Image 1 (cartoon, rainbow, N blue to C red):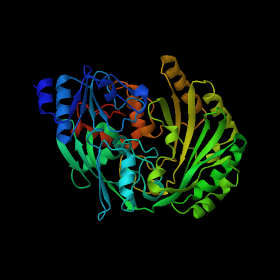
Image 2: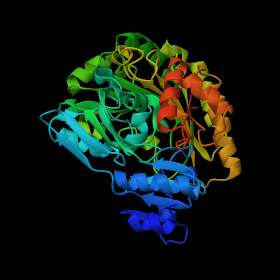
Image 3: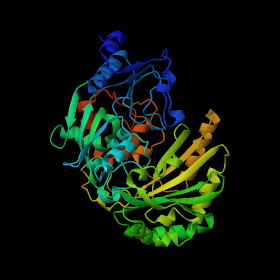
Image 4: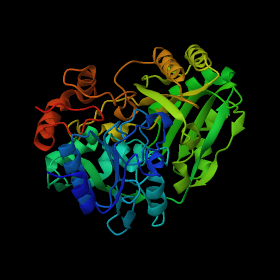
Length: 460
């Protein structure tokens, strides 16, 4: 039987408990309201440390959470009274093999590190659109980014993972080695273990791209929707737009568009001529070093605030989402509280490449239209402010399409899991026809549901 003393004597990293002076710092998360008072935070140094932490937590009866970038607003990377396996302090190295066009990324790294290291070799990989997001959580949940139009999802560019599974074994998974685990991890989330290293494909990438933010006044809403209707069906692989309906810091409602074109400013302005011709009140677009692109939406996601969000699906016709009626309803909802900032963020990444893969290539839907994220942030959390944030999110969701959205945008997956709970139905809805196969993999690698913080799969 492993006691805390024997666990700590063999553990190479740092163990933090409530009696330590840096305990509060160890609980820090992107979303302040995602902090939970863990009994133990284990800052692991390697896969062997992860194995020790899993074994100790299981014997001690502690619920396990995995912390990579700490970007989950619903608390998936935190555990009240449990044990957090934290990869962010020591397992954050990134290494490029330029000859093979591969990048080796440890599970606690953030996307900025990936972008900065890869571009040194004229290469890039698909990564998140907020560059302080952790690599791990985004990757196992699917992974959309500005390069998805050209190269697909993060899971489509994953060639190998190192996973510490529920019994403490350290496994390498590829298409040929533990292929069932490799299939499950690429879209099945954190259901199967702790990924300590990812190996991703890289692609040739120009050093400068055309990108930035432009803003429109509310009276331009119909014209922006019409532009999207024209552009979206023929969007090219090198293009991408993120459109946000929101109130600015001054309280004024408006439409922000974050523009990406993997080419020159001249060609980018031609590609989006119809959008620029509408007459933005702000134009901050221009040539940008590639490694900065995944930071252009960071202002929507400052570290340390309180967050609540929910994902829904894009309508097939953009103007069904971006029109004066929906805009007015969105602004009405987000203006209902002076204490909250909110945005409805519509992600227009071309899906031809994503949806061209076989349906069974990974446990991820290949028929999605795209994603909308409804996000609310506030300071100084109270139960009343938290309830109001949820009210705002669901008021906006009521005027947008329904359907189980992108799993990484789920609002509430931290409720303690019980078989037959509502989360079981949400999990089935997310994975659809892949669910039975995932249940078999769960039974093999985690029959006791040790990993249960995100769309928990019930073993077959």
